[in-house]
Length: 349
Image (tube, one colour):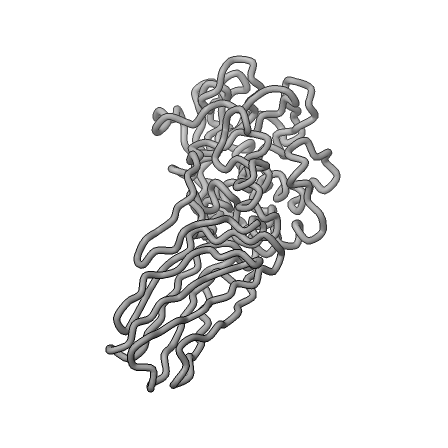
């Protein structure tokens, strides 16, 4: 069913969900992810600036004392990351290379919990172990440093993509097109997904499943899927992920409907294919009173307050129950109906 949120004039209905600080790739099939990073990391022992091959800038690569300042290793990591599907967010990335035994602690994990790498969106920093790109994790899961870099870069992409209307946005749900295709909002509503959960429900966190999906389009299509059964990517999910990377969502669309003079009520329909907030504004003669009732899937979602000459409201979040959800907006007015009235609806797409 569609997520139910009461519509009130100038009010917001918000999804309550925890927010993710660090995103952890936990390479143990049975272990849990570690908790969020706590604040900024200590000053690195060495820092290198590694130019990007495309000339757009350089990435800052920090090293812990145990990892030492390895120029060639920094270059190998940056070259690998630059070859991944990416956008302008690449130049904002910062790397911290640490010894294998340090990563768990730096990522906020517990000894032996399997944490292999992590990403802190607050400072755009990826923490990864020192080693060749083919170096496997120590728990025998088969993940390599290259895979860890790719998964964590998926989080960096999400950090720099817009997915408004969902609390936590792309950080917690993944970017707009993928999250909408996977209907992550509906899955969170019915208990199949847990946005922002880096603990007990790590495997069902949409953000982690987004990062795994990104890895599939970024060079690891045949890696076995070990995350949520509710997010196993099909061709449509992979295509949506590519779109999020290369041609991301940037702004809402606007639809305008006219209520003809003389009519006391009229219903307008709007097909919606993306999740996010839906903003409603109705305007008419100053001596008329307007309200808008909204329904979807045959169920009433709510109505704006009746206002003099205008009425406004917002559905947030507006989660589809179907790939294309048809919303119905019924404008009602009293008083002066001799002039036309207008309904404007802003929606994700």
